[in-house]
Length: 542
Ligand SMILES: *[C@@H]1O[C@H](CO)[C@@H](O)[C@H](O)[C@H]1NC(C)=O
Ligand SMILES: *[C@@H]1O[C@H](CO)[C@@H](O)[C@H](O)[C@H]1NC(C)=O
Ligand SMILES: *[C@@H]1O[C@H](CO)[C@@H](O)[C@H](O)[C@H]1NC(C)=O
Ligand SMILES: *[C@@H]1O[C@H](CO)[C@@H](O)[C@H](O)[C@H]1NC(C)=O
Ligand SMILES: *[C@@H]1O[C@H](CO)[C@@H](O)[C@H](O)[C@H]1NC(C)=O
Ligand SMILES: *[C@@H]1O[C@H](CO)[C@@H](O)[C@H](O)[C@H]1NC(C)=O
Image (spheres, rainbow, N blue to C red):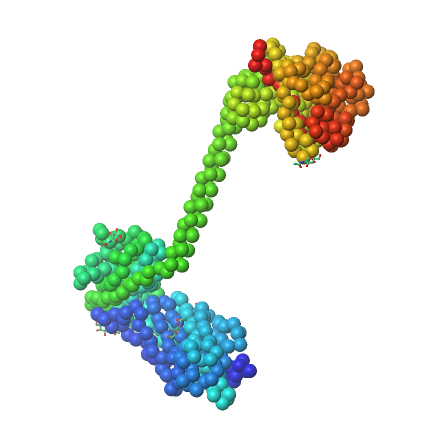
């Protein structure tokens, strides 16, 4: 029903005379925020007015306390432009909740149902020009106390001021502590209608206690000049005789404090169309508001977030630097020419290192395990995800397979090149099916000569259900050694002695003896191990 009423309303329009545009008055320039009054056509409670500040123009239609006008219910409100062909609705709002519509500008509006609060439509245009000039109508429809439809209307004839001379502050009101940049701009344009042919200089002053402090000037001869003590951090100015260009001088301050509020004055000097000098001014009162607690909290929050992201960035950079530093140290260790991992000086971790045995037959790449500083082992067997097959022949176990960064067997040839003089110990690090880790260290460890590679381990009591069972056995594979049938049955190469209680080269993922097993562990023969590492280092006792 409300929308239907609007359509009926749109049919009638009332013409009103348009205001003459105002001629410029030297010495008493219009203030920056002068109000153009509406021309009421009927006596209603509707207040329809316009406002102009620089290039920003707004029109506002307000219904005050509708109950005193005999309205029991406000149904809707609309603002339209009156054109030659009829009325164009620019914005409407109804109590039924329909969204405001607009063809130009921004709209803010509110309707109060019982009419006890103000209802209004406000339309704002920035960088307005003369195309907005013309007639507008505001209508309200509702019901009276007898529930009969009532229509109130008010017209407005909009005439824009010539732009300038004027002065504008951005923001218009200083928010102490929150406003980061304050700019004040003196501007003038539209020479012809102001009877001006040229502006030769513009000055901006701050007036405090009756004292006039010149802050900055801009002239055709000297350009921009910022006066000492003005606090201005940047400024721009432009003077031109072209009719359609704005002449201006703009100054900017950073983090303005309370002492920036007060009265500012722009003074313009120039020549009128007859070549006589003219002078005019425009003033502005800059006020401030204290920021609300919510705004301060928001600012605090923003700063905290910024601080946190910077801290994070710093930590990321530090981590990246540490990573690169470590890479450099690892490379340095490789070029030092270690003969065994034992002497490598690196923080706890596992590193691929190039060893240079004395035999002159070139380098051996191994994975060194720094268990703690000074406690460094040379890994010769490593499994963790089943990507490498360990079901291989003798040659493979002799020369090695896999890569030090993945699963691998270093190879007897390499082990023998590294384990030359002295005595060695062996360390076995294994993890069971639910990732519980176990470490076994046998203080005596040796591997015999090619091609038996007989194992000797001693010094740790595994009850005969660990590696000690294999001590004294030769290495067998499917195709080599004394017990190839064990290698076939247990799927790997190992020191079998009528098979074994340990089988770290067994089949990945298989349960029982043929899988990766270590019978000494609680579930070592039921579930296959999920991680194995065999490593050696020199004995502490010679
Ligand atoms: C429109 O004018 C009314 C009355 O002066 C005022 O309460 C309201 O805030 C104005 N709306 C806007 C957006 O300025
Ligand atoms: C006035 O402003 C409107 C809308 O921004 C634009 O389309 C039009 O070209 C402008 N007219 C003049 C004379 O600048
Ligand atoms: C412009 O101002 C001069 C005096 O300053 C006056 O003689 C002249 O008539 C004015 N011109 C117009 C068009 O108002
Ligand atoms: C305004 O106050 C700030 C700090 O509060 C000070 O640095 C500056 O010199 C003052 N400016 C003037 C013009 O008093
Ligand atoms: C095993 O680990 C290696 C090295 O991290 C990786 O390249 C490979 O894709 C993994 N394979 C499987 C089967 O997870
Ligand atoms: C490890 O596995 C065994 C079964 O073999 C189970 O009893 C035990 O609870 C598991 N432990 C954990 C920590 O999952």
